[in-house]
Length: 170
Image (tube, rainbow, N blue to C red):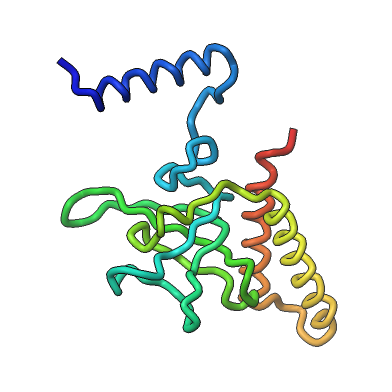
């Protein structure tokens, strides 16, 4: 005999399956359709916790949470338990470029901060990065023809944002 909670889950799965058959639900659930950070993909936004256990808090001096647009997600197994751990490399569009990229461990993420991609914000951020790279190249063309590490990182970040937006193009 199933519990009430189990029956509710089974009924929800039946509804979702029927919605897929009717064409009113995407064929596969993603972080964007479910709103769940556990299904997070590049392009979505996550922010760090600012309250709770001190080991999991990641914030600036003014207690603004670190995080932003997810650029990439890495996974590795925990050596003790074997559980898969994730880390999110994020671009924070609210701070100066030299401190915009940060890495958050999954335990540091506030699950309620997860949001679906804001395509206009991602495109605007991409354009800003490209503008900054172009500006640096224009100023340094004659004095120093070798690209700096910072310029290369900006180009890589812009490329990741372009790849994220590229998924939406027909």
